[in-house]
Length: 296
Length: 296
Image (tube, rainbow over all chains, first blue to last red; front, side, top):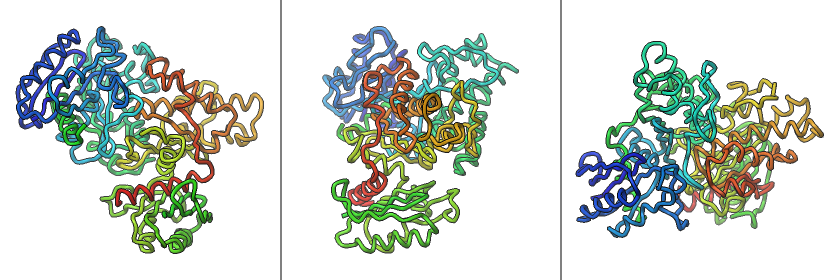
């Protein structure tokens, strides 16, 4: 039995189980102060120590993932008030002496989709979420992507869509991908949230969004060469977006990568997540399983 | 003892040894027909079967790296005449029944630099070569980057430098990175090869080149988060280029990634290769060693 903790900036989701078919005690609470929130997570673990083999935490970030660092297991320079340099793993370790897997929320999601979801038949994949922000994680030959830090794909530089006059809203880069294509950018550009757009506005919004996301998809293809790109998050519910994204990606590659798995079957290369509502906490369960298996 | 074969589009380099300090019988011959060229490579192996523990091939591409594929070990859709769908590994296996490591030239170079060179103190790195073309390989937690294909970083879409009126020369994408920043693009833009530029032309050429390469460096940082970026190839000899590339990368990140290893020590993050003239064949030796250790 594992405990998975999806540590989000808005809410925490805890669950016990070993996978999608036996998830029990799914418990959600808001992210308030670190003391209160991590206290509730600790209490959840304490209630599930019987037969516990591992804990997994899929966290908002940035996080310290380098085991050699004294700050391993912490959230580091987050803009979220009160959460800078907060140790997440340490307090959990005090409750249960089991292996603890710790990674970014998006690496957790990539691992979960690779284990049970939309990438379960391949060895390398990328998971991108497009919502309030844009983030990505991934797996290469079974290894989750991290190095100096962890991927921050949302800040990729993009070339503006020619009809797009929106200035962009990233405080660091203005018109980087997140500044142009995350949910709040769509809302600010069109004066209403994406899900409320209709008619011509919807068509234009989808065309622009697809153009920006296709730039990320192409960059990931060139730099990482994954076997599958999983695009999730609320913005992907925009009608027609994923089809348009596939078409624009193939258009951008323009015949260079003569890989039929992309050019002829983009619908199998760029896919939506398969794990649904519990994807985040299942990613955490997958991290727990991995930690227990590797003795991490 | 290993045999390493650097299979380049212009020349093959073969050597025996276990690393930079005991490389022997370094042998170079031009890449002509597959029969002749692979025949010479086979003969080199046949001369070194005493105590041979593995063979490594670092090849020009594209290559098939998926072991499940019937074409594993082949060069696939290369523009090089006569070399399409040529099996490289098979003929070598017929000469010596030892593990054979096979990868792209740039993944080989990344592994060699990680083993003995500019990235020997880290677990993840990227190796980019900027010469006749632009290519890149990399390593994540000890795994070389491949998935559906292998990285093709040279074709990353870039935003044009505002003063640059050169159309770009990539037959697929026009003004992608390789179309704008490989050696032939520099020569065509300025009317002479990079190494012959002086004065204002040199300054302008370096500024543009640094701007394009910084876009790749930033994209790799956001998507892969490696611990080190190694930039090699003839174009990197342009005076002042690597310093300018570091400065422009830090400028592009614009404070977003508050990682002192990048922002305060860009000279340790973006580095030149350390293995010198034998980097390619040492990469192949590293692939051999890896194959022998993993039983590949």
